[in-house]
Length: 145
Image (cartoon, rainbow, N blue to C red; front, side, top):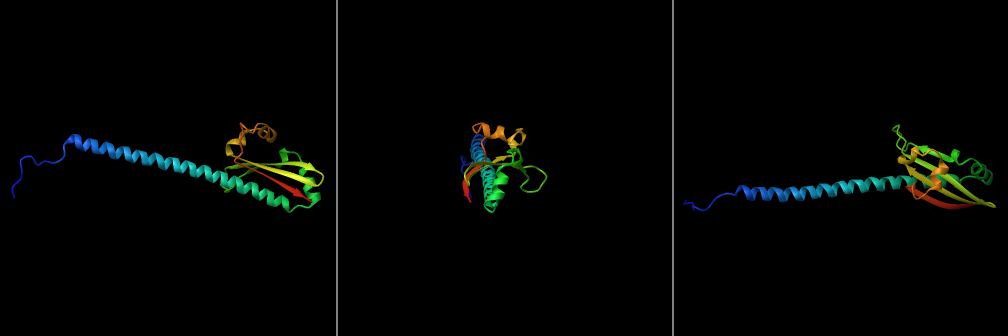
């Protein structure tokens, strides 16, 4: 079999350009993967915070009028809970239960903050500035007896 004189392999420039194009594609996919992982973690935090807020509301709905009145009469700081959701020794969330009472109607607001807000000294400070301290979940309901 005869070979043509001009038949050769790829030049070094062609190989480098090809490698550059593959590298750009892989870097783009890696960045997309990191964004997806970050968004997944944020969604997980919001889902867990919503679960904790709903859990608190379900717990309060089982109270009688006297129990609900007594619990609502406690201080805001005593209704400020630090929660270790997965029992690994690291506090994950902060749940604050707030009440607004009129007659036998209780408006209940459950604020759930992520671990970044554990360093804020008091619950009233968190609730005073909702723009700076945004909760991961805020659920409001009305309980009547």
